[in-house]
Length: 397
Image (tube, rainbow, N blue to C red; front, side, top):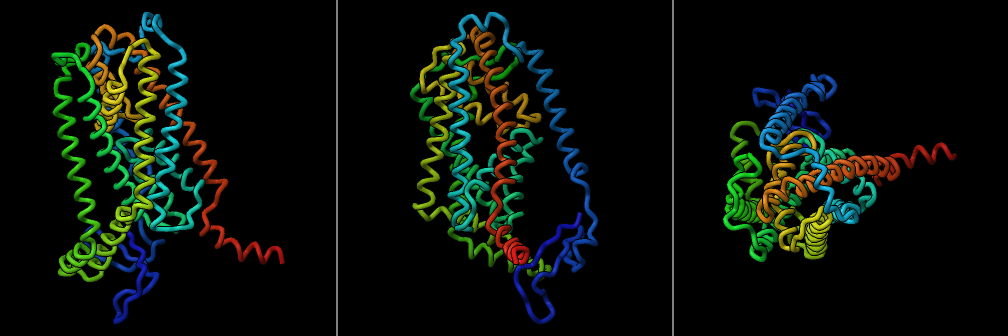
């Protein structure tokens, strides 16, 4: 499908004029046809392959969980040790962590546009995170950039830069805190090489955590280096791509520039400081919610064990999974519990935790999506308000 590019600068000498629409065809060349003449694939056609793959993965997980004796719903004996208040405490604390996670995006967007409407951005964040949860194979990651770019105040690529930075920092903070918590906790010794009847080597979790720490550290350093060297990177892309096409070089170098602008919060402590504060609060509140639920289902965890469990579940969400992270969510949660609790408790009390936790996240994600759409409808962007002001003034006259 041709990819269309809206030019934002004006060139002379018969090159590129402001407002012209370019199409990058399959051969790599640019053409100046109008957007209305471009063929468009339906959204269903584009999403269908990933949706099908996601459903197949979910079916595979369901088969593996059933064969491995890891229950989807808790057995009746799991309720014998239930401390009921742990579940509503988990829901409330998780809702607080959702607020912190969603609201902090504003700090990353402020260097790009100072007059964004807070509650509109918050609504877009709620819809975006819900889409990440429900959409197949993390397609929902693009929802926030798409929705914010429609307002015309931040470009899509700039927003992608902020989302990428947010994910990298989230991953780095999570693995560092999880590693610290793991050092303070006392796992089973030796760690089991299976969960239920599934051959999941729980003993590999520490080395996986180390690998993830190195990976996210390198990703953060790469992001910082890219921002510092953004101008040389832009010139390099322009000179290399310019050997093929000057107009394509202008487009690609513009993409590099706008992506780097999404990292503009990095050198500003006034922006990055509050973002890091809310990120730490978000993960700490999430770990507290995890501890409350562990205690509520009858287990007796330490705070460090609760944080390790949260970290393992968070890393598990990076695995390919069905819609709603189905499959990877359950396997990661059972794996986290198997690090600290005997198998019998994992398959009874742990099954209740898995069911309650997943049900709560599905419900909260659905409610957050609905609230997000309401906020988007209630609070228009400043750009939209400015566009409507002349027509409203004419109507009043």
